[in-house]
Picture 1 (tube, protein in one colour):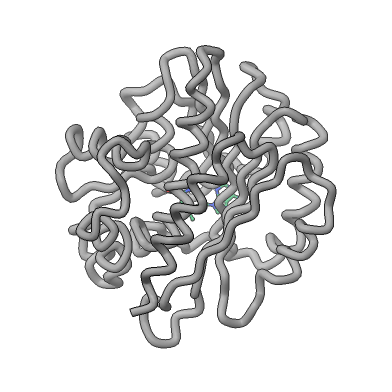
Picture 2 (cartoon, protein in one colour; picture 1 turned 45 degrees about the vertical axis):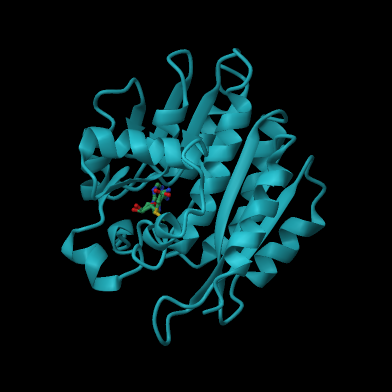
Length: 263
Ligand code: SAM
């Protein structure tokens, strides 16, 4: 039974890292007119209220996107800022987009979205958050959905894999899953998020990914202070296959921003 709910963590520093890279990736890919496919294996609920009891209880958004906005990390024309502004204009100033809504705000009418979410409550919320778009939502295992859709039509595009890692075997399975998706869709951008944990649980997966011969890899990690004492997550990683040219500049900017966080 899945119990993870992203509302407790929405807008935290890991989201800022992951969502900035996702937004930059989509901004690069949408420079060409050709249509795209966007596929998410672990979508969450899509729209988060940062003044909800759950978000306020952990304070993770306050130390994450709210601090980033106060400190002016991203210009108004940064694609993540544009997506946040569009969502807040539609849903109110306390809202924050999950990755599906970030994608929905940056994609164009010719693009196609396929979103998997297994948790019943999160799935209902996701479908409601995307109701005004053409996105297809699936209450289905996201790995199975990606295997069944790839290679997608349109053939250019992105799959975002953002598991909650509640099932610890995900760490062992992911390098093989990514290799299989890359074999089916050799031109697709495959983006995997993973946490940096104080106990180093992610290391074997990271090493296994690094040893494989994936094309055009961008592998980026940032560290940050734990959200509270004893909290295991101390950083965020993104492993991107077929990373768009130019994403390197975006991650250099993130190095500087996250590097300023030691206090
Ligand atoms: N990608 C979202 C974002 O950035 O806004 C956050 C996703 S959250 C980290 C992970 C989600 O995956 C949870 O909502 C959980 O219910 C869902 N989930 C867990 N296992 C899944 C599976 N096998 N297939 C689809 N969804 C799954």
